[in-house]
Image (cartoon, rainbow over all chains, first blue to last red; front, side):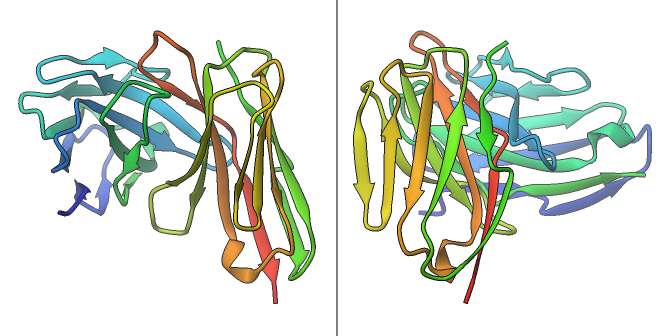
Length: 114
Length: 111
């Protein structure tokens, strides 16, 4: 039982390049979330999903796209990376909706855009 | 826009001291969670409070949800170096699917 895993752990991109971050969970959770964490700003929600095939925008969705084709996977894409997207990205999953249960977090992906 | 402000932002104390971290908002939340995050890892849930005025204890940590469910506090008694980390509060509103996270309090406990 691995919980929530994220790949890659580290990545350096040049401005304008694209990449996809993969999140996988083996707990059969319905809800999945992508956050970014920047110094002094806590965690900010980028996109989330309430079930397979669904996605919704969070607080800071611009410049990101997501897909949830399989229940266990939640992908975060950057089509044209910008230096402002330098951050640590966390994926999380939960069994129930917000407030109804614990969010389990992955170990994070540290992304640098030069 | 819902916001959760945490104070203080940074705290450095000696082992054995007591401390309180605050999480405040102008919005009402149906529940509030506290997480601790260590370097290079994701946050880990410490507690969830759901009732106004609720107090929960986890060993030396005491969590309280404000009567109006707009604020919360975390009190640590006799802090130890193992308590070092980033403490985050997160609020949830009934009927939504998302959490709003606070700005974080970075605690360092010196031996």
